Image: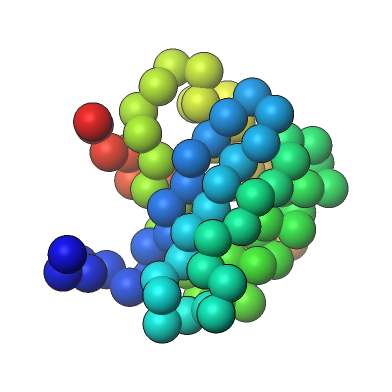
Length: 89
C-alpha cells in the first residue's frame, strides 16, 4: 500500500484501550497500546510528538467524538496540535 501522508498516525479508539500506529519508517515498534485515562492520553500524545505525527486518522463512530476531543484538548495542553481525519469504513 502506498503511503499518502507519512505524518498521519492511525488510531483505533476503544472504550478501554487505544491502539496507535505511526509509519514503519518512524519507529521500530510502530504500534502501541494506550489506556483511556488522561495520563495514558498524555503518553500517547508525547509518543506522537516524538515521531512527528501531526494528523490522526480514525474510524468515524459516534462515541469516539468525545474521546477525540479529549485527545486533542490534552495535546493542546502539552503544546502540540493534532489534526483529526476520519475514515469511513
